[in-house]
Amino acid sequence: MNTPASVTDSTVPGARPPAEPNAPATADHLRAGQPARASTRLRGSNLKALAAARFPLKGVLRREFAGYNAASLRGDVLAGITVGAVALPLALALGMAAGASAGAGLVTSILAGLIIGGLGGAGYQISGASGSMSAVLIVLAMRFGLEGVLMAGLLAGILILLIGILDLGRVVNFIPTAVISGFTSGIALIIFIGQIDHLLGVQTPANPNALARLLNYLQFDYAPMLAPVLISLTVIGLMVWWPKAWNARFPASVLGLIVTTAAVAALNLDVPMVGAIPQTILLDDRLTLTNLPWEHFNSLIGPAISLAGLCAIESLLCGTVGGRMTGQKLDLNQELIAQGVGNIVLPFFGGIPAAAVIARTSVAIKSGARTRVTSIVHAGVLLLAALVMAPLLGRVPLAALAGVLAVTAWRINDWVGIRGIFGRRFKSAMLAFTATMLATIALDLTQAIAIGFALSALMFIYQISRTKVVSKPVSAAEMREEGYEMKSDAGQIAVVNVMGPLFFGTANTFNTTVEDLSGMRDVILNLHMTPLVDTTGLDAIEDAITTIEGKGGRVYVNGLTEPVQEYLGRAGILERLGDERIFDTSDQAIIAADRYRAAGPAT
Image 1: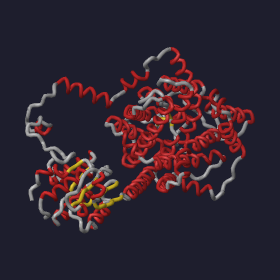
Image 2 (image 1 turned 90 degrees about the horizontal axis):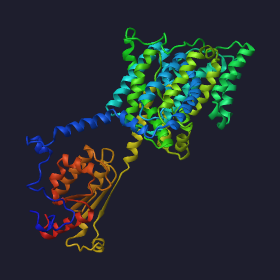
Image 3 (image 1 turned 45 degrees about the vertical axis):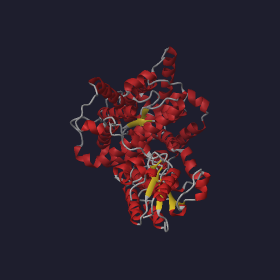
Image 4 (image 1 turned 30 degrees about the vertical axis):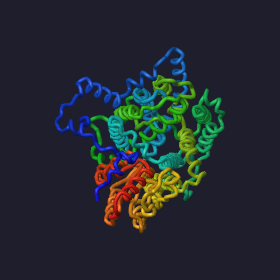
């Protein structure tokens, strides 16, 4: 039956107009050989815009230093000195915790402050040796030695650089918060478990698996030493109970190291110490082009990916926190480029992998930092400490550094996020958090992230699979209230409302609803609450059209979102229906179906 004139777009508001015969040339026409009008100047400006998007440092610096003056410089310098004091004990401790040396931790924080801080995506970011990184690195050190740690850092730096250049940093946003929180808590446990020997003054068999090591401690076949226990408790106590107002002027961690180091010297206690710290930033134990451990290359790819992902996650989280505190947005791609360059350079000086650190960044902002000058000054403070104070730093007891790391491990946890997950009883988030945390301490860190991500994906699919598909026959009374009098049998027209995504997880619900439309002749598919469809959803729609048309009925659609419209167009469904059966609202589609039936005999 031919479509009657009463159903054309001139009589049904909202119908899609037909294409105009003399419409302007489109991109398809240009591709077919018609002359393009884009000028060389336009192409040049496009290349400049692309370069600015891929390498945005110039624009970042221009915005950052706008209105910079002597007062700003003074604030940056004072903040840099404060951050340097805070970073010093952490740099020493994290270098040891990573399976390297205290000197490696210092070199890492010095060069990271200079290189990554100088090239970073925001002036407030402070990078250096990271607690979360050390949890990965200690395992590598046990398996492959220091060379493996340095090689993994180099590979991670290359990956991070590529992620930044290729604008792939946004992928980090796809990792659920519960997975990140669980991963962070697992890392905190690894850090703490790795320091129990130093906290208690004992020596237990080394084991790269944190869970196995914890179970070994629970056998209690060792005898703690009093002096290391008292030293670590002193540092922990000072860091926990030192007033915040005083901590802003003199960090409790530094005070703890001074007090315990002085006590050890005064009492002549026989406890393990840091040992010699080289008075240079070019360490003997470093990577060179002639000693790259290629024999471990394949084994280090997985850990390198973990390190790269961890660095990207930490940079994003640090930038988010810093951005909230300052109102300045982090340029993630530039930050990743900076992290990549820094981590490529670090191994050749003997430094371990680095990342942006939330704690040091927060201290910098609270201390009045405005630009990246703070990061550079903080690096200068650490360099001065390495050159001048190395003999004194070498006498710091390991139990004191273990106390610093124990408190750091506690503070690494995302307690606000954890309370939100468990306090509100979000079951899927609770499961993802717990599984990721346990996998982190029991398995390889790469596997832990994969498990947490897979669990979150399955939970998400399950949740969105509960899409409701509701059918409802047209009511002549309701249409009358809308100002339209039905001319055919309204009871033979049904509106099927799809309230959610139509994909492989919901297609069966849709099919069941369509199959239950007994006695209905025409069907209106209301998709205005459908944000997306996949190929399974497309097949379900096509099957519905075929089934309904096979019984003499017609299918109309309305409320297409842009992604759904594009997908239906590519599948040929829109062409199959024709413009006269595609509308903006259900009422428009009902009117079109009614007029079509009223204009001729039913088929």
